[in-house]
Image (tube, rainbow, N blue to C red; front, side):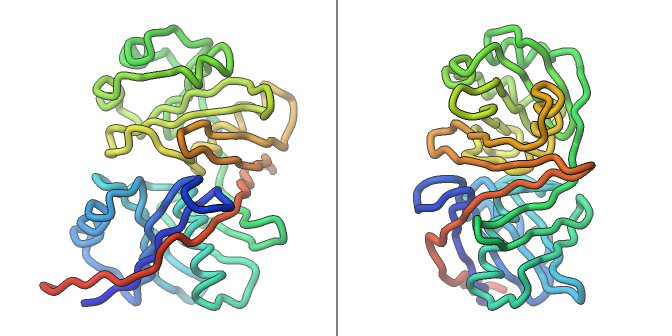
Length: 262
C-alpha cells in the first residue's frame, strides 16, 4: 500500500515557523490502529487524514498517542493541500468532523478557519497546575482545555512547567495566557497527556481564548501570538457562536508512505 503524505507548516509564511502538520489524503478510511501508527511514526503534534465526501471532506486528527476531536493547525494545513496541491476549484472547503461542520475559506490574506466557539467556564485551579507552574494564576477556566490566566506577558514567556504533573490532568491540555504588549493577548499550549509537551501553534485553543478575551477586552477582533519557540501569529474574530481564525501556511515536504505489509 502506498499513501501520499505532505508536511505543511501552518500559521507561518516561511518554513521552520508555525506548527508542522502531516497531511494524508485518503481514498477510503484506514483502520484506526493504522492511522494511529502512522501518526506515531510521523511524531508531529498532529497528523490529519481526510476522505472526500459529497459535500466536501471528512477529516480526523491524530497526535502521536491519541485521536482528538478538534485541531486547528492541521485543518489549516489540510486546506492548504486541498486548495494548492489537489486542485480544489471553490474558495471554500467544508469538513465534517467530530466537532461538527468546519469551514475553511481561501482569501487574499490567507486561510480562514470557521470553528465553533467554546466559552470557557470559571473553575477551581487544579493543584497540579499550581504545582506545575509554581504560581497561583489570576483565574482558571475550563472547556476543552484548562485556560490559565497569568498576571503579565513575562509570566507566560518565562513559564517552565513540570510536564509530569500536567500529564495527570483530566482535560486535553493547558493554555496559559496574558494580555500582550505588542499583541492583544499571547498564549502557550501544553498537552503532555497526548504526547505534546508544548505545541508550537494551537488553532483550536483560540475557540476558547477568543470568547474569553472578548469579554475581558470588550472587542471581537484580535491579533494574537502563540509564543512558543517556533511561534505563530493568529488573526481571530468572534462572530456570534463561531470563531474565525486566520493564518498562512507553506509546504515543507511531500512524499509517499510505503506500507509493505498492508
